[in-house]
Each structure stands twice: as structure tokens, then as C-alpha cells.
Image (cartoon, rainbow, N blue to C red; front, top):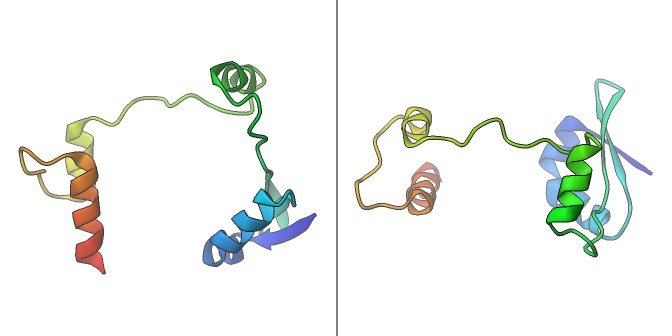
Length: 98
């Protein structure tokens, strides 16, 4: 099992995800303390029944709430144009940052 620090994982996420896809789990360490494990999810049986089973076991959590338009506007600091879809606004915001 491979080990990765939080900062190393952040800087090399794509490489670690390739390893996980290949079936190699990765243990994430924060200041030499193991905090999480990344493992490949098998594609067979990943329907809603599988997700419900994971939730029942406490492996996953349901979202606490859906983000409202007001929360999104507060997060990005400016109102969205009226006819703009959220995805388009996010892509535009990202392109302005680069």
C-alpha cells in the first residue's frame, strides 16, 4: 500500500488517481498520522442500491443541504448574470483566474 502526505497528494493528485484506478490503494498521512485511504470503487453494482448500502454502513454521507443561488453568489462575490447557467459562470470565473 502506497503512502502519501496531504501536500504530496494535492500536488500529484492525477498520478495517485491513476494508481488507485489500477487497484493500488493509497493511505493519506497528515503530519505522519494516517487519516484516510483511497481505494478503487468497483464499477459493478454501483447503482443506487450500492450507494444506499454504503450510506447505511456509514461509509458515505448524504449532503446536508443543496447550495442555494444566494449561497453561490456569496461564495463567488458577485451576482450571476440572469440568463447564465451556473456551469458557464463557473467556467468563466475559472478562466478569468488563469
